[in-house]
Length: 363
Image (cartoon, rainbow, N blue to C red; front, side):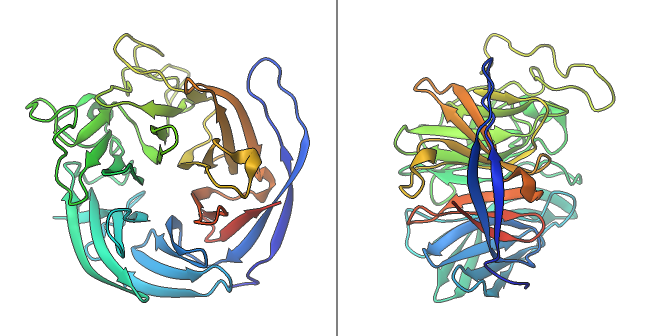
């Protein structure tokens, strides 16, 4: 580790989407907490002073947020580490004390599948590792695993990418290209929209997704938000509704990688939910929160997303109808791929980068 808590200052370019674009100067800072992490994919707080971090290679570490000290606690079994696969998201359960959930790509007969596991965390030790839900998304490609976790008051949601196979977006007999809703034990809730429908896997809450790497349930508004990668252009923020089809690959705002040809039949279509926001060009989103803390009142109720390709934190204001009405981009000069953003219990914002750094957002 090199020089924990080094403070980096940057000017914010405030970009307002819409016809009246303007800029203004506003200072934000990135305070480095620690470095040397191996693609810190997921973050979750033990308390205000420490967190657990998943490294994509299949490791869970404990990080002291005051000193930057790192300790390896656990190595995931049977991780399929290829391409975008590996250890993915991590979150403490809101339903059971000392329980954590982890999503990862599990090695099954040499192929990878997005899997939900649980474990017990107490006094710096992780035990009782158990696969709670092994999805039907197994392939030998290293593309588009998803995957983020979020919770409402009694259920767990997690996202799975289309695994690089476009047809999976509209194939409801695979979990690939879908957002799932489960009970805490991995079983299917009785009120899921496709329960007992033999043409749709019962765990599916919504489908037609390409690669949703951000997912967040906002308690004050009771809205479930997702952000996903489009192809060349066409990243989307979506307001997720039960049983809805989000179009991939039938509808898309993106282009083919091999030429200036639109993907899909059209940008919109009857029976398909339209995005709340589209990014052209792509920012390559990796995570999503709605900020509800008190520390940064100017961010209250706003969506914050990490950008990989365009290396910044993306801040989106939405109105009461769930429509995106303004966009801001901060920390562009940091020049790092922002991997995960999380709010601490006391309202601090910490974020990780693919360079292996962990930062706190400050002013």
